[in-house]
Image (cartoon, rainbow over all chains, first blue to last red; front, side):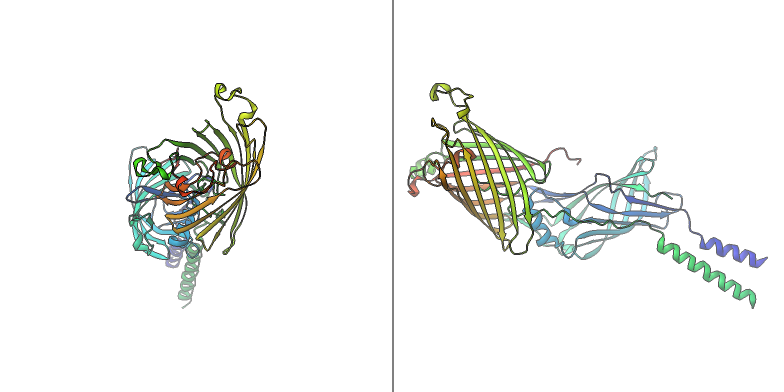
Length: 193
Length: 291
């Protein structure tokens, strides 16, 4: 009888909880934007290339354990001026060596924003890797569910260029701010079980 | 003894099973992605008068205000070397239909000339030492002349001009941009009675001192056909501030629209005192973004 109990426990331990996975929707229109300020004016770069996933186990939203992985192709950033794109890629981001900005982490906190169960405030902790430098970061974002199997994430945060060993570009005689503001707006779809 | 072996086997089986699930749990696959290889050699879409192969990003607008002060440098300090005016000006607005195709409309107060043009990148070759981009620009110009002054109907066919330009650009050592712009202009003698044409071999050189400023010069000699005055020549400096370009320059020509300067500068001789100050300001605009 004891051996049957042990066997059952072992079998249950070997079974995973319900796994949920969402992948970045490759067909959706995303917007990943950085904004840089200079004394004369600000300029921005935009791309729609983001890829990655969210994975968690359990029934609750971002249940434990959970895992986030997102990557943005920095080679696709567009500032609106062709040669400036090239300068940015070659002289500052060095995308030949480090083409991707990568965030790996986990959701540490989720708070429901309304009673409709369609909007949540989430906090993610993890590492952001840019220009070959990996640093710990905490990102606040808003998670929406516009449709049953569709998730939208919006997040805004800042990075300091020196933290990632990126030179601070000059515009005319003025240096850009060392703080770059990042704004993300992207969509994920639920992976079928 | 048998019971312990049985338990050990079951634990190992469970652990192996769990490890396998962990390794395979995320089904996401990295996308195979090749970023667009659009070669960008020059900062701006135009030097002073001659176009580069550069186009705008899809959906962007470009607004340009240009001035050529009519009083020349010999007017001296009293008219601030011509800056007190009057001036010929050109206002233009361009829009990018795709990353490689843009349309532009512009108007100059010189002979009320309006032009509509399209420009496209046609071919590009990536090379670390000698990248090449080829493009083309074609357009129509219309000068609604005053019928009383010019004795022709405002919509007379002689008030229309047509032009085509081939654009060849390269950038040496990522610092020295070179452009060749062979061009054809139909009805180049706008005010004449006969329909003449001109073939021009435009060329420019742009030296990027830093990502935000450069010096440049351009010339557009008429090599065949009708020519009005000396070869247009312009040299100056360009600053970029993020969304603006500022160009300040000296020129022997006060003609701004393509169908006007392709026929010559109108200037006689190369006396430095007969040169003019000019400037242009370019603003890149984006509308309709989500943020």
